[in-house]
Every structure is written in structure tokens, then in C-alpha cells.
Length: 79
Image 1 (cartoon, rainbow, N blue to C red):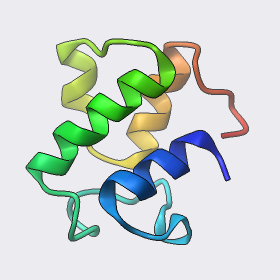
Image 2 (image 1 turned 90 degrees about the vertical axis):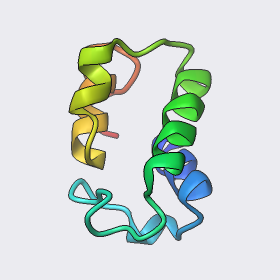
Image 3 (image 1 turned 45 degrees about the vertical axis):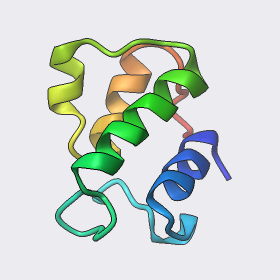
Image 4 (image 1 turned 60 degrees about the horizontal axis):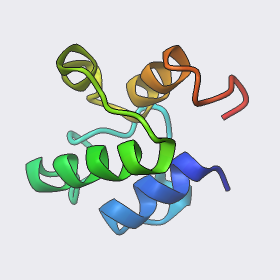
């Protein structure tokens, strides 16, 4: 399991099998505003980065999170 999926599953208290690129607050009940903040914090700690405000506004699904992490050079295309 990827580090990203592991982090998302832990923060949102869901099975990693439930996570797809389309996973978002619209289809994951536990992905509320509080857990969005927790997820961002955990991702910053896990990858050793700080997101910009523009990046944070874009990160509304797992696919978009992956894209931002790839742009930052901390996630490979295979993840």
C-alpha cells in the first residue's frame, strides 16, 4: 500500500480499498472540514512539505491531491 493511501485511510478512518482517484468529500462521509485539515497536516508531515493556498484550494479529491504531490516532486507517477 502506498504511503498516500495509508495516510488517507488512517485520517479518514476508512479501508484503503475504498480509496480511488475519485474519492472526495462528496463520496466519503468522514471527509469533513475537520478531517480535511487533519489530512493536509498529515500529508505535509509525511512528505516534508508545506502546501500553498492555491494548492490547498485544488485538493478536493484524491486524484487532485496526487497531482499536487507529483508537481511538488514527492510522489511518483506509479503512486
